[in-house]
Each structure stands twice: as C-alpha cells, then as structure tokens.
Length: 419
Image (cartoon, rainbow, N blue to C red; front, side, top):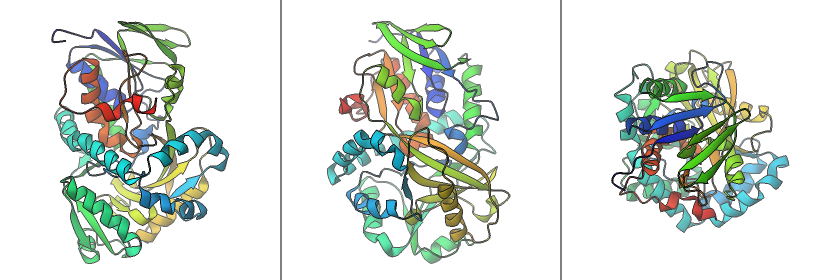
C-alpha cells in the first residue's frame, strides 16, 4: 500500500464536493478530470453553491431523524405556515425513503448520526482554512459567528439540542432575548432566547468561493470537460469508463459527486441507495444586508437569513418533492413572511431560487467505494451540510482514492449500510 499511486481519476460533478476532491487529488500528484454539463465559472449557472445559506456550520450535528421531530411532522405538513411541505404527487416515489427514515427515527439512530456528523464537522473548518490560505477570500468570508433563535414553544427540543452539543464538546453560548438583541438590535423580538456559535463563519458569496477553488484546481493542473455524463462502469481492477453522449473516457478510478443527481448513477451500478431530495428556497432583499451582522436562524420557522454581497438572503423550508416538480410559490411566500416577521423593515424581494439537497434517510453522507465496484467512489448525500462539508469531504475522499490510511472511522458513511 505504501507505494501505491493512483494514476488517473475522473470526477463527475463540479459542485463544492467535486471541486474540493479534485483540488486535494491534484495536490497528491494525481491526474484529475472534472466533468459537469455546466461550467462552474458561468454567471448564468445557479448550482447549490449559488443558492445555499452560506453557513459553515461545524456545530450542526443534529438532523431530522429525531423522535421529537417525528411527532411534529403531521402538524407541520397540514400547516401552510410551517417549515415542512410535501409535493403530494411525489409520495409514491418517496415510499422507500420514508420506510428507511422511520427505521432511523429513534434515539439510538439520532445519537449515531450526531456522533458521526460531529466526527467530520469537527474537522470542517480547518479543512477550509487550509484552502483559504491559497485563495483571496477578503470579500467572500466573514467570521462573526452564527445565531439561532427560538420561542419557548418547543423548549424540550431546544434543551435536547443544547445537551447533545454539550456532550460532544461543541462550543455554544446560550443567550436570552435581551442578549440576542445586543448582537442584532434590528430584530423584531418575536423570539424568547437563542444561542450563538462564536467560532462559526459565513460566506458572503458561496458561488464566488466555489469559483475561486475551481480556478485554483485548474491552475494546479486539473482538467475540466463540460459535458453531460450519461453512465459509468468499472471494467476491471484498474479501469473505469465514463460515457458522455459522444465519447468514452477511461480512468483508473471515478468519483460520483453529483449531489441530488447521484441516484441515477447508483441505480445503474445496481446499488439500491435510498437517496432523495429536499428542496430548499431562497429570495434576496437587495441592499438590506446591513440589517444584520451575521446569519440568524429562526428554529421554530425552519428558516434563516444571511447578509451576502447580493443583499440579505432569506433561505429555508424543507419541501419533499423530487427534482422535477416546479418551484412552489407558497414556499417562496412562506420565506418572505418569515423574513418580515423577524425584520419588519424589509420591503420587496428579488431572485426566487429553488435548489436540491441530496438527503439519505439517516442523514449521514455516503463517502467511500461502491459496494460492487471498488474503483468507483461515492461522495454525496450531505443534506443541509454540503457547503460546510465540502473541504473535509475533499480531504477524506481523496485519501480513500489514494489508498491512504486514516484514523477516522469511515464505516458509518459506507453505502453498505443500505444494502
């Protein structure tokens, strides 16, 4: 193993995962080609990194596989003023995901997810800092912490979150309403308390950061081919073939990092992975980014706001509805209502956007080889934390590709858990 050197790698997907994996492999001296039907440098392209909340969230260990959340799901689905929505025409396609979700929605699974999210989240900030030493982030990143606020309505859930983060040693500072307003005096005090994660940072322009890392990848010798990849297969122990409509490309190993679109490839490879899509929305309020100094998330509403170069970005809601349903105006209106509840100073909005979060029913990503094709490596399923986990995924997956030893326990991220 010591002298093993992977010669060539194809990466399908040029989002934050693919670009960070490519960058780390180039640093190891591997020949890397990145494929995507869209050019990351195009200003007309609006991928997940264009539209996300921009938070680097190393504290976000708790996910939706929680018994306390499950109890609220029916109520949330029946309210149009709620953080969760369902496209009813999509339910038949989600039955497998829902079956696995219910199986993973208990205290034991919740703590398992929290533990193994923490394992990688804990390394996520340093992994980005390493990359940020090589690019100019002066107008792209701010380090002012991130605030969550809530009402006293679901205190049991809030106390559970605080306790689990404490148990894992995550730094958090609990705030009363007055203390929140000292940080963010423009907020309408419709909440009772909050928490600040002082070590967290946020992006002023996530797509801008993706572009800088992509340019660094190219500068260091990475290749990019703009084409729509249709299929891939492992031919033998040392060869995989990636096929577009017009051409075949050969590599020793191939990485699938196509986020919510990865299921097409895993289905082709005969792995029944229950990947599905949470649809997330955003709007901008132009020239209103000065109303808050840092991201503020209102937990009761499942929504947040981030000051960005494009204006104040309001993001949120979870809509289960797949990749093909149209944008829901109800969800957009929900975000606008939530934003104006916290900041009544807001007026008209711009730029309605819908993006896709690739989510597995236990809320852990898949990082590692396909169970049937060891030279095809998976890197997807990061749900709400794709942005936070980009740089550390790059380090972990490039290490897997290069056959390096690691002291991380990677078994919980294996696709084998669903087969």
